[in-house]
Image (cartoon, rainbow, N blue to C red; front, side, top):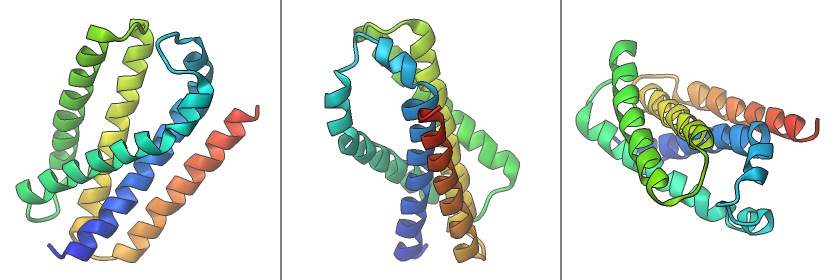
Amino acid sequence: MEKKRFWLSTITAWLLFVGIDFLFHASILQNIWKEITAAKPLEELALLIPVGYTGFLLLTILIGYLFVNIYKEKLQLKEVVKFGIIFGGLYSLSSFLGSFSFINIPIFFLTLINIVNFIEIFGVVIVYNNLLYGNRFRRKTGIIISVFIILLIFGIIIQNI
């Protein structure tokens, strides 16, 4: 695995992660966030967005590191789905239980947050499988970046409805 391909795949996977997060948390679920008393004030949350996105980048790197060290070639869809379900499920469940133990958030909302986490992680796994191995790297990267842009556009539209 060449390092340049890994890091370009990581940045692309991270952009998809950020796009999904923006669509859900800043747009679709924005009204629910306003009702959560355990969350920081919206002004402070806005200033801390780069911290959260840095955390997403670290998680994306971890997923990529595990992926390339476990799998040496492109997987069949069944195996990608299996890895995504196992990693995404374990991460989301551990996050749910950890958050539940100390944050005063209704279980329904905590469940939504972790479903979004699962979707984000699953997306990252799909990106890594498609970009790390095989051909048409530029084309596939362009498609994923286009999806990122579309997610942002939909998110902005939803915010302004």
